Image (cartoon, rainbow, N blue to C red; front, side, top):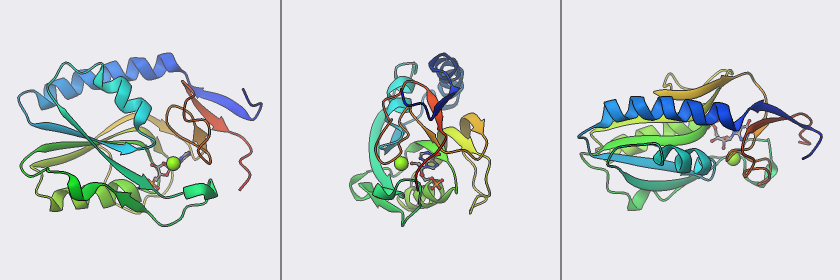
Length: 176
Ligand code: IMP
Ligand code: MG
C-alpha cells in the first residue's frame, strides 16, 4: 500500500451503509420498473455490492462518463457514452455514481435521461464532496459526505489506479 494513502472509509462502514440504503430502495421501488443506470467506471464496486443486497426486481444498464481522463486530478470536458442505446421511456431510473463533486455529471445525465421520457429519475452516490456545485440538483441517496479531499478506492481512481481498493482512501499528495 502506498504511504500517501490514508484510510477514510473502511470496507465495513461501506457494507453497513449499503445495507441501510438497500432497505430504503426496497421500500421506494417495490412494484416499479426499476432500471439501475451504473456510471462506469467509478460506480463499478458500489453497484456490484448494492445489487447483491437488493431484494427487488431490477434491470441494469450502464453509461460511461469521463471528465478527468488521463490528466488525473485536472477536470476536462465531460463525455458521456452509451446513452443512445438505452430504452428508458416510462421506467423508474436510479443513476448510481461514485461521487458528487461539481455535480456536472449527475446534472447532465439526469437531464439526458429525463429527455428519454423516464417516468422518474433519481440518483445514488457513494460520496458527496463538500465543495460548491454547479447545479441545484442533489443526489437522492448519499452513502457518505466528505470534505474537499481527493479520494481513491472502491471504484474511484487517480489516473486509472487504485479502483480495486476495498475502502476509500485520501490520496495525500496527488501529482497534478
Ligand atoms: P462531477 O464533478 O460531480 O461531475 O464528478 C465527476 C467525476 O469526477 C466523478 O464521477 C469522479 O469520477 C471524478 N471525481 C471527482 N472527485 C474525485 C475524487 O476525489 N477522486 C477520484 N475521482 C473524482
Ligand atoms: Mg474518474
